[in-house]
Length: 111
Length: 111
Image 1 (cartoon, chains in turn red, green):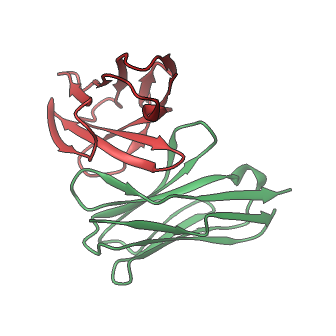
Image 2: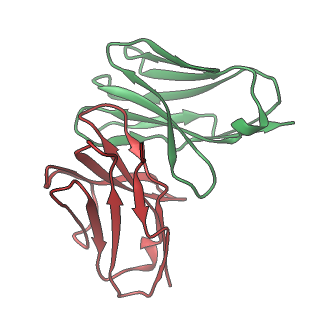
């Protein structure tokens, strides 16, 4: 059974650009969540999607957005990138409120 | 607002030792608690999930307990091995579809 797949694994972007990250959940999992991990702030919740609807959102600026498709795949977008957006972005999928499974993450570096 | 604390922040032990990692949380209305392992630069690997109706879960050399009344969870690792070296994270879920993570315990097992 395939795990959570995140693409790309690494990205380097310039300040002011925008970026889109992708997450394919485990088959049958309809809940997809996104987290940002930085050395200073640790792991912080960005948002959660279920059946193409955002059900919960963390305390991040509007530059961070996401969406979910009918096949449960999800994308997150960050516009007008800042240096502080450099982080490991992790996606998790769940069936209901059970165990969360994470992907390998996308390492974003903003220069 | 749920806050999760992990003590100690770092731990170094000789191979073969039994050890306990601690996790405390402020909101006793926790739905479940999950322990993860993270290797450097990688995603999170789920170790154990304890649901609110359970007191403990076991998987191989790992045993996790949950005491909602005291706001504590512990992860017990028996007969530690160098391959156990990683950062261990606990995360609480209050049923709002977002995990709140502790800052982790960085474990090093010396051969």
